[in-house]
Image (cartoon, rainbow, N blue to C red; front, top):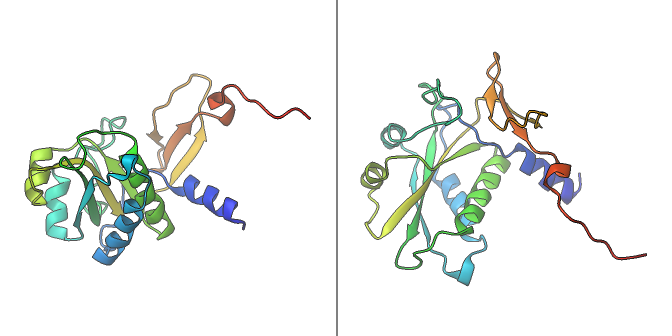
Length: 200
């Protein structure tokens, strides 16, 4: 398999995972390696304003979990059940003293973490809906740092299938009777605009 094929495969397999093998732990060393990928991401003005709080502790994980909101489109699902909850978390914080602007930089860092997690046999889910003050207290985050994302991590306990967006244009992800998570994506043709090529 070529490098291009490996990258394409890795991107395709990097999906939002919301059910995990909770009993299979994730080490702090693994979390360190994922943050190491995040810190290498491109950053406007090279300000590097992001800091990372980590948990691989079952007790701390339980406290974090109770302050998260899961899967807006699955309204009848309160989140993963016991035994299927994340084994680790990375809380991404913005250091306000370094930058007071939110831009695409955090997206680069997050994607590096998720790609790195997938390459290590893990899955992740980026959560933006959480009780910030509680997460700050649980993770002992200083007031100068603004928690902006929580990334839930663990060994996947669900299959996620990417499929073509139907003619009705419904973008909502859904689960079938077997618990397989389906994610509609627009086609390449749908997202391409104008195209120019050198004349022969």
